[in-house]
Structure formats: structure tokens, C-alpha cells
Image (cartoon, rainbow, N blue to C red; front, top):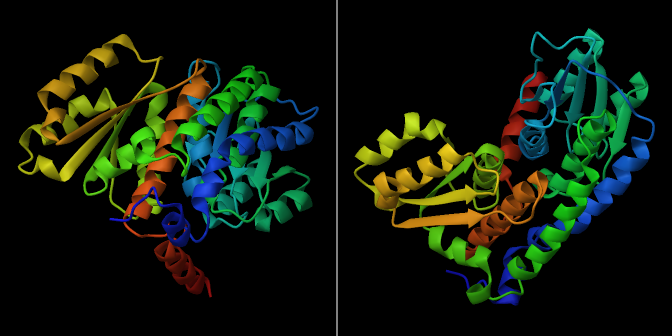
Amino acid sequence: MVDIDNLNEMRRIDASGLLGLTERFPEQLKEASQIAEKKLSGFSYEPENIIICGMGGSAIGGDIVSAWAWEKYGVPVIVNRDYTLPAFCKQKSLVITASYSGNTEETISAYDEAIKRGARVVAISSGGLLEKKAVADGVLHIKIPAGMPPRGATAYMLVPQLLILGAIGVSECTSEIEESIAVCRKQKEALCGEKPTDRNPAKGIAKRIVNTVPNIFGNGISAPIAKRWRTQLNENSKMIAREDVFPEMNHNDTVGWSGDAQPQRFSVVILRHKYEFERNKMRIELTKSLVLNRAPTLIEVWAEGTSTLANMLSLMYVGDFVSIYIALLRDIDPTPVPVIEQLKKLLAEKKA
């Protein structure tokens, strides 16, 4: 495997610079706040429901916002990863359409449908068709910086959505964003490429799970972060990974662990945080001792910070670094996703 303490080797493999982009995440959070605050000045609305439309790396922000708002807001906040909208989307709905490129066909389709239904719409993109449509329709458009892979622009997709909810009175989120910036800045010093493996938790985790099928488990607010870990391992590390959540996994996945004949193929990563429900804490400990300890590698990653958002983003930040270091260990550039581009090309040809 590649020596991931050799900076020259890492730069050679990471030709597109995803590691450096990830190290800028705390500053991206700050920049995203400044961009969104200017655009949202005077924005207000009282929706009956909120629907966040996006795909892939553009949708993870919606997952985080939905989980963040779970105990803060009396109006449903759901994430829609599809061409169509649910039947309850009507004139009193707020539809947030998020596409980093602005050209995601599923999100464009959902945008068009939201406009037809008379919903209040906000669009977030770096440009593309979504921006053109929003300008033509008189829809509020929050333009974010271009030139990144969508999964490397999470801060720019996430923070505007949080501030939209803050603007309509869901919950004060500015202090949580500020704390998250401070927490992630501190984390970066421990997780960055220059920090050697013996003092870098992300590099250590990467080396322990690189030759396994990682199983990522969340609970409560870490459930969407488990999904983020899995998708980052898929896209950056180019590997198969699984994710599941407590307590649901105790009603199905636990049985699979008890009967699998080759548990040595797997590793287990459990994402822990200070907001865990007491019975979930108990379930995690019991499940570890009953079945999850059959995996040769079992790791717990604990969140940092005080607020809900800081707990979520600190867990996400570790996973982002882990996925990049696994790619580098395998001598793979983490940025290109040629099979996705190939699929998009084939789909575009089918339109003709």
C-alpha cells in the first residue's frame, strides 16, 4: 500500500486536490454563511411542509437539515431524491431545490413540478439550467462557487438550507454554524494530510478498514452521517460499503450478523454522539457484545462539540478524511467518478 505519510506520494495520487479541498471545509462553512445571509435578507414564509430536492452529493445537506430540524420544528422537513414530488406538495409547501451543477435532471424535474403546483421555491446551485429557470421564473436563487465535485461542496449546499430554516423561524442556527466552524477547524489540525498516522485518527481508521467491507452504523442525528460515510467510501474510495441505523438494525441486520459465515470480510464503524437516546445506548452495547464483535475490526467514532450541528458535522468530517486516505492507500485518485459520467452520457443519448 501507498505510504500516506509521504506528502509527495499523496499529491501525485490526489491529482485533483480533493484532500486540500476537504481541509478547507471549515472555511467553506464560513463563506457559505456569508453568501446565503446576503441572499436571504428579508426572506420569510410560513410553510405547511418543507421538501428538499437533490441527488447524490447535493442531497446530503438536506439529510443533515432534516435530522437537525427533527426536534426543533413542528413542520415536516423531508428529503426528496426523485423526479417527482409527493402528493402533499401544494401551494403552502416550501420546496428547496439543490443541485451543485444546476443540471441534475431529477432535481430539474422536481423544480418544474413545484412551479406548476404553485409552491414557494428556493434554488441553490453554482449555475446551470436551475439558475436559468430560477431567474426566468422570479425564484430566489442562491449561487454558490463552481469548480468542485458536488461532494466537495457540501458546506455550500448545507448552510443556505440551514439559514433558510432560520429565516422562517424554525430555530436559531447561526451559533451552531459558528461552533461547527470552530470544531472543524480544530479537527482539521489532527486530520490533515501533514499529520502523521500515529497522531492522525482518520489515517489510523483508513488503515484498519481499507481491506474490508465497512459497515457504518448511526443512530438519531448520526443516521444521515452514516449515509455520508457510506457514499464517500463509494465515491472517493471506490469501494462497496454498507450503512444502517439503530434501533432499526436490531430488527433485521442483527440476525444477518449472527449467521454470516465470513464475518472477517467486514469492519464495523459506529458513529456516537452526546444526543443518543438512552435505550439506543443500551442497544449499541448489547449488539456489540452479541454479534458485531464477530468483525475483526470494530471502531467507535465519537462526535465533538456541544450543539446538534457540531456533533453531526464533526462526525462527517472524520469520514470525509477517512474515505480520501483509503483511496490514497489504494493508489486511486479520489475525485474522478467515470462510471457516473458514463451513465449520465448514456442517459443523455436516450433523450435524443
